Length: 188
Image (cartoon, rainbow, N blue to C red; front, side, top):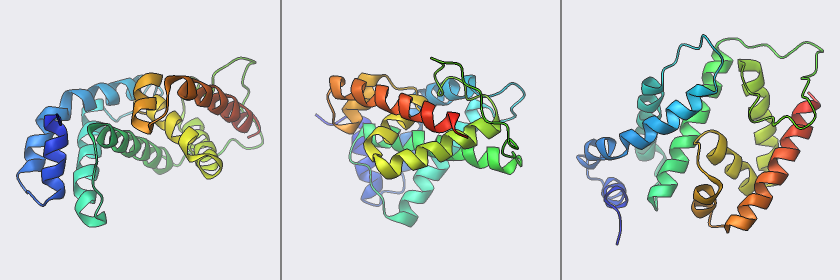
């Protein structure tokens, strides 16, 4: 049986203007958790609050759907789109702050340090975004897995389910992507 969220997403796709008003109360708590998880990893002193991130991401999702003709085929697809919207908002804010690339000082990552856990400053977030874009060009599934884990805070199992891959494959992809990102970001 289809969930309420999936049914409402289908109604939105079919042009029901009232459906988008019904969707937010159903997904708000989950979106708020995703945003709070992501905001925990932001640098101290950031001005964007989790609530504002949720609202901006939701407006982008529902507003852009009509303009771009996109539809969501499942609850998981919607939350993957929400994670991507949050990522883009945070990247846009980092760029707007005028973050400059480190001038000749490569990022120093300790051996064994997870590059995804060390993203604390706008410049590092921009570096991660650049590395993710490069990874997406080489392996879109692994890049999407990173986005779902890092920006949406999903578990490997949840992200694998959304991507249609087994937990074992998700684990292998996650290990590879982390190593790949570590290598890519340590070169900057």
